[in-house]
Length: 184
Image 1 (cartoon, rainbow, N blue to C red):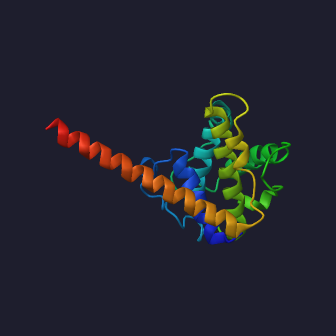
Image 2 (spheres, rainbow, N blue to C red; image 1 turned 45 degrees about the horizontal axis):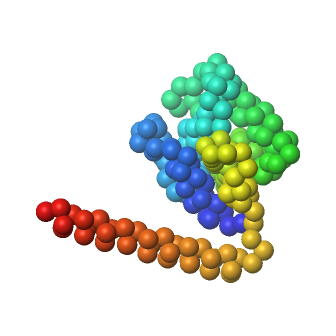
């Protein structure tokens, strides 16, 4: 996949999970192109958010004893704990994460790192959907893992769904305006 596309979708996944850039450190550069250049502090913030979203109690237990100070985001203990947890996820049967090597997190930048973090964010998003879906056999969460064989048709379906959603919103807006006119 294209690194720029993965970087964009990584950011969208993190935002969809409830990450608020304003909630993070003000010194940390966050945004769509977050990992095009070396950005250890952003990795620290995003990784902690994703691990906490995946399992808050394990994240508190795992990272609670690591001492993190502003400017000290290259902590080897933090990277070691991340690698251990990511390897556990990669070894799961239905995981979409690639095999993790310890050198993956030494320099948090570039296409390989972006792909790893993108896959991790996708995994967290899927697990979050499974956890927050009503019922146990919701096919929507499983459908996210599927990749289309014909990308042209997938893009066409996406445009059709987008246009239909837009029509629904326009109709809803019109109805609300009509109700407001009648209420006056």
